[in-house]
Amino acid sequence: MTYDIHGEWDELTGLNAPLYQDPESGFFKDWSVHDSVRTFIGQGVPAEKLVMGLPFYGRMFKQVNDSGNGLYQPFSGGGKSVSFAVLEAQYIDKNGYTRIWDDESQVPLLWNGDTIISYDDTESIGHKTDYIKAKGLGGAMIWELSQDPDEVLLTKVDEELK
Image (tube, rainbow, N blue to C red; front, side):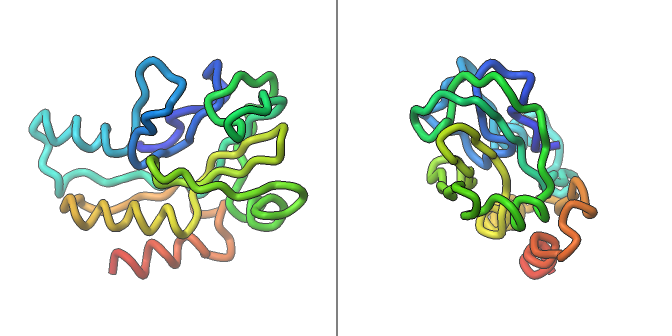
């Protein structure tokens, strides 16, 4: 499971499924998809036995301090996961939300000055499928298919891992 790395249980906003750690992270000890894979392989688990989890949803944080595009800031509302279908229909570059790419972590986020949403899209899924192939991992699993009814992300995974 390489998602739900940060969510409403944290004191600061964070990335749901960063491929790599962001050196600017506000967390004392941060974690990433890469750290998880590296830990398992380092403990002797064969790479081909590892399957990377890909989230087809995002994590929303509300009432966020308006600093640093809302990332690693205190928040007082949230706890809501949002399906990729809803993100695409209502949030990605819509209704005042701007997509921001985190180069270090290789994932996007949405920000509107008050609410931040950490999610995956076809670009970040492409980086993750490249990582799966480069590391010789066993494949990918998705949480969960119903959150991408138009198969936007699923098609990307299928095309990249065939």
